[in-house]
Image (cartoon, rainbow, N blue to C red; front, side, top):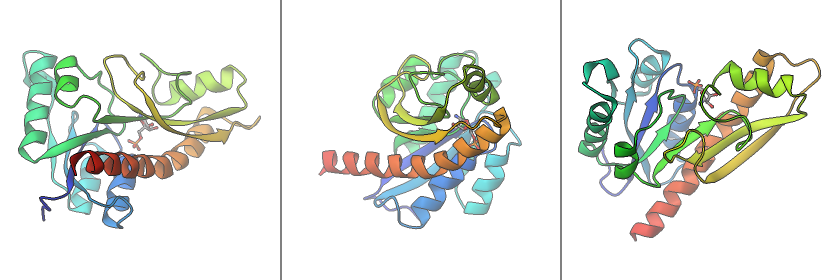
Length: 205
Ligand code: GRF
């Protein structure tokens, strides 16, 4: 059911979608007042996030870049699908493609991303998944965490909205650290979405 007064949220994923689920459950439980997740788009077929969407009753589409002549055309389609459903705010949740300027121009300041490190450190091209946690451990850091930020034209770069910290233990492997960070992500992202929606609703009223 669509509430015309709600802020429409769209989510972009490439994989498992545990952050997407954390957002969807928070919205369903009323922890993100005035928000409605209207559409999930995956750039890959047969990923876990699509099963989660089915289970959660959220509409989901697969839109693959190879169906388009170039990335700009791919993002035009993604933007059109979101716009058709009244999406005003986009959450990247484990979305591995670089976001192109034509998409950013349409949703400027209204695209959030979550990154599994304390940006501005350990971000940028190639810094995703276990690469991030390997680099953090290799550098001997005692702390890591996760960051929610606004997406701009550079990878992992736009204004930081919220961060959460975790300890790095001497016994940590990239996998054990990833699990600790991911548990924090599932708390941080819904709270960051709540704030962003509140901010957007104030701007609209
Ligand atoms: C998370 O660690 C997120 O920070 C990063 O990709 C991972 C996605 O995990 N951008 P999931 O697909 O949400 O489970």
